[in-house]
Image (cartoon, rainbow, N blue to C red; front, side):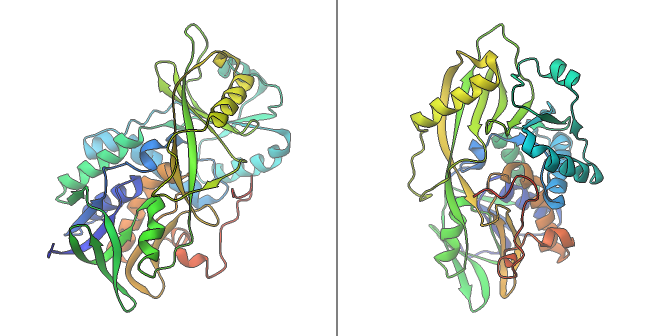
Length: 389
């Protein structure tokens, strides 16, 4: 591979695919997207893909709001749908969370997000399948819901190709090529790919790719389990995505009476080797989520397990992604560390990062996501709920 590129993007999860597409849309001439397996083959493809804007810092709330707009207009822009369903999102909270949630909802409203608390009568009408015991309040986002993570990623890859972008599938990046304080490309299974800029969007594998080349990367690979259940017929079904902070589980409709169910924070996190980890779910996890599911949502009693599996989160010290160039390292940008938020943030992160690379201009709040925040002592602290870890 002797061709020289303006930008090489490593990793075609949602963030890498969006970044590559938007680089071409920004007018960057020669861009190549490299993927060792297939688009969305990593954490993106196994994401529950719940869409909600309920974050405790304005930057993530605004990025998700932006992503929702992008998902909604994807068919017109790309000629392909990402499967976004505006089904709504509910957040069940306990008494000790109410004050923080009130402050958080107020912040989100100031940022143009349609959100608020349901009244008791609204809960009774909209959530007839809910056991309300221990649920102090319910937050509702009408624009929330879910999307298809593989479909969304493939749509961006298709859009990238349609604009003349080059995609290299089934070729793994082995190390970052550096010369002094400058990155000049990557070494792959098929040889060197030289470029003015390299974007590390390799998800849980971003750490090994960087550190093998002497580039610092504080990141954990955490095993995350999910399950799929089918409800019995003739029972009331939730149609929206639900984050249940009272029982620490989440559910997301799949259609045909099926739902993804996983454990939410707080819980134990298992650090693993991203190249060698157990990809099936633990029986203890399956029994635990079913018990929590049946207690809070009685119509799920007797649900049939259809599938269960484990994927990976790429987790940063403050559970916020790394995005953008680094001080003292030319020709390199991070686009990783989604920490379980990655799918809903990916479309907007890709668009903003592409503009940053193409025009050397960036909004001040977006720049705070850069890796340099660690050295600067400017890690994010969530004002409500605490940082996961």
